Image (cartoon, rainbow, N blue to C red):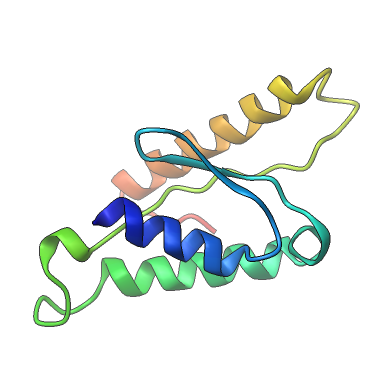
Length: 109
């Protein structure tokens, strides 16, 4: 249920881009068109919606309905990335840094 809810949220926020589940609870969005142009706004919207799920009153959501997400996003940079895998590695590194911040109680922004 949590994966479905997270997938629905990702697809709703990033509605102009393809979304892929690449592993257990990991998703990748390949930003296109308006989503690419508005990425900062969309990431902020996504984080706000995640915060709503994370901090929902226990009467509003069952434990299995609550979701959280660590986000890592980067833009391809020919000075840093020799290929697509390099871009994914940088995004993955950001995502893990975000997870660490979340575990420490520091909200990533």
